[in-house]
Image (tube, rainbow, N blue to C red):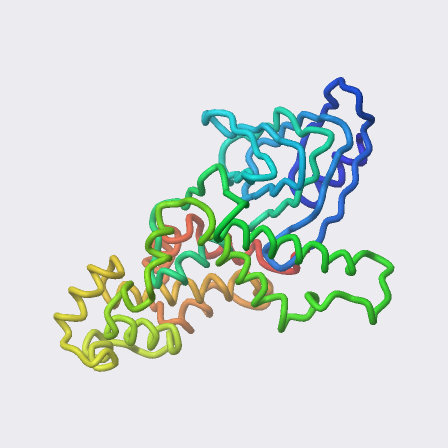
Length: 322
């Protein structure tokens, strides 16, 4: 039991686990691997168990291959995951697994909160100001849910080859960055298309219905050359429309002005750079100036409003990550 708690704590979340009296003997089996911002694995406990996990800090999905799992988060009503309906967990809210049945094998998917939030914004082509809230259940018997569950199962099976001691020539294909990065993106895309949330209908619309072509041209130009000294007139030229038309279209389809979008993209690039930088070799001011932010006080305010922390906090948290 202690080993199982340590294993789950090291790969997923800190937890307290208790065996519920029953006819089965506790015999945990865990196969867990990493794929970028994802932690995935196949898990079973043998006996019925109860778990207290606190706040997860990440999105999480449990796809059941058998048995059942009853759970609750925060003040929401209790739910029961089965082989037909996966359990979906939010990053916030105290999490309790009331019963993980002994005959229940789980394909577990932990999704970095920031990675999924950023992927949603990339697919929508705009910033999302409200927290993403996924529905507590996901139908795995049909449609996108079934396809996504099959993809996760295939990935977990392949990652078994990455266990310590595996021969070099038997290492998983998924260890290659050429495969791992697009595969991670595919899993994130699939979850956003399969799970219930307020933005799913918008994601399911044909791309050309999401925004007019001039808006897309302007957005593409900003994403491709965010360091360029764009002006409202210059962006309108990229879009091949008038300045006023572009401003009104951006407010309607993107939710902000064209120049606010430029700033938002640059702030994201700053964050990406700070998250991997050596805090002893690079300063916030260097990165800010490189991305066109000359007023450091105003930049820090905009950064904190966008990401919920100061740029110096992002930089201090940078460095090697496990």
